[in-house]
Length: 451
Image (cartoon, rainbow, N blue to C red):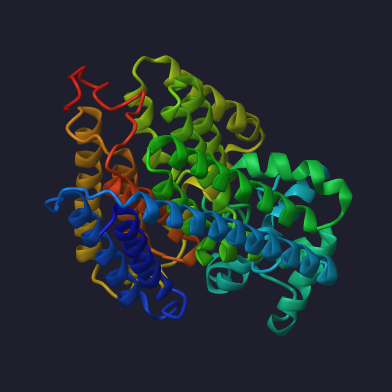
C-alpha cells in the first residue's frame, strides 16, 4: 500500500477517534481521558513500531491521487470560507458572539479603550466564571444586592453597556477580602494581554463582529503556517496535501475557533509560526514568535520553549524574553496582582469539572499521573535536544497530548493543541524522505545528529 494511502487511513482513524469527544463531553471525563490515552499509545506505536519498506505508488496512481487531493483541498477551503461567512453573518444579525471567550475579549477590549484595566481589582469580564462562583463570593463575605433570579439579565446588560454602577452591584469590592486571590480579582480576563492589545484597536467600531473577524484572520494564519510546514518538510507533496486537507476539514478547529470564537487559536498560531521559523533556520524568529505566544497564553506556549535551546546560543532566548516582557510589563506596572491572579493562578484556582478524568480520580492518582507526565516531557525534550530523536512533529504531538492528560478541565477547545501536531506526526511517519530541519536538536550538548 502506498504511504500516502496509509497516512490517509491513519489520519481518518484519528479523526474518528477524536470526533467521539463531541458527544462525550460533560460528565464523560473518564471516557475522554481514555480517548486521549488511546491517542498517546497510538503515537508511541507510530514512532517505534518497526517500519516496513516504503513502496512508492505507481506514477499513474500517484497522479490520480494528486488530482483528487487538489480538488479536495479546494473544496475544503471553500467549505471553511463558507463557515466563516456564515459565522460573520450570524454575529451581525444577533449583534453578539457565541459562547463565553469571544464576549470576554470584547468586554476586555472595550474596557481598555475606556482606560480601565480588564485584569484589575473589581474587573468583570469572565461572566461565565461569575455565574459559577456564587458560593465563593458568599464565603468571602461579598454581598451582592442583585437578586439571584435577576443575575443572568444583569450580566447580559452589563456585557452590552459596561455600566460601572451595575458592575459595582454585581461585584462590590468594599466587603471583599484583601487576599491576592480575592474573588474580586479572579473575574478578569484569563488570556494574555496581547489579545486585548490587538482587540482594543477595534473597540471604537462598537461591533462585536470585529472579534469574529480577528478569530478568522488568526485561524487563517494558523492554517497557512501549518501548510507551509507540511509543504517544506516533505518531498512527497501528496502527503503534504493530505495533512493540509485534514486540518481544513477538522471540525474541532473550525467549530471551536471560528464559530465559537475560542481564544486558543491565538497561541496556536504563534506556536505554529515559531516552528515554521525553526524550520526556516530563523532562530530570532523562533524567539519572537514564542515570546508572542507567551503573551497570548502560558499553555501550551511553555511546551515549545525548548525550541529556543535547540536553536543554540543566547540570542533567541533574549528575544523571546524581550517580546514577552514588552507585552506584559505595562500591565504588570499597572496592576501586578491582576496579572498574577487571572493568568498565573487561575488554572490552579478553577474548579475541576466533569470533562476531565481528574474530576473522578483520587488526588494521589492525579498527582502521580502529573509527575509521570512531567517526567515524560523532560525525557521527550532531552532526547530531541541531544539528537537522539530527530522527529520534531512527533515530539510536539506527544508533548501536547501529555498536556491534555494533566488538566483539571479538558474542554474541546484544547483538542487542537495536540491535533495539529498529531496530523503532522502521521505525515512524518509515512514520508519516505523528510527534508532535514536546518535547526535540529543536538544543540544542548553539541552532539552530532544521528544519521
